[in-house]
Image (cartoon, rainbow, N blue to C red; front, side):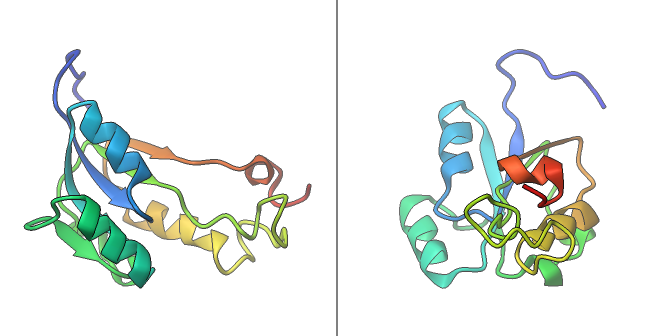
Length: 129
């Protein structure tokens, strides 16, 4: 891994993109989105209306994505579904939860240098809050 210089533009991929919260911040900081993955059709339509996505890699279902298909990126951002591990959710856990286990799909695909994700309180307790 090479060090990045201050102010250097990095490429990122937006996984579980929603309507683009991570993208908004990274683009404002001068970085470039090279692709996004989002399952929800309404979130995808909003994302495409908000951002210029023409020519970017896109996929609907991360479970169908092969890591080698993804464009080169310095950063992967993801806010994976957390309903199964959130205090407000069913607390089925990261492994048994059908939604929260999508986290492992990112790990399966991950081949880049830097990853960033959103956390909820129960993630570190494995759903035992």
